[in-house]
Length: 142
Image (cartoon, rainbow, N blue to C red; front, top):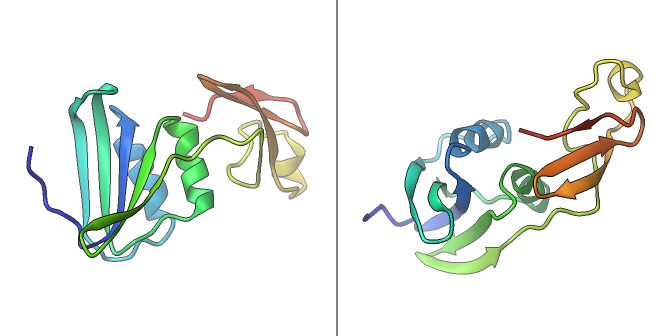
């Protein structure tokens, strides 16, 4: 499959099939602007069988966003492109703890009622399971 090459930007690769649109919704909240976005859904993959992929022209993902994407896609690969060449390849890994990245889904948690910053321990990395340090609620961020 031939696709348009990026001159500068980010390629988010190895997203499990069906997660690309969710990842794109998250990225849109990061003010990606009016730049071109190319999304591939259910394309063949030697690693995953089928995968999704996102290409972002003139937009670069920071470490916080890479960590967030790894919650949804533990095997995600992020390629930074400059002048049509991959200059950096990042395979983010889940840390043991996550702070302030996503809200607790327990509506009675103190982070939702008192304004505390969320803090989670990673209970499992495959599948990803988070445990809130305040209310001890466990959930999968999907």
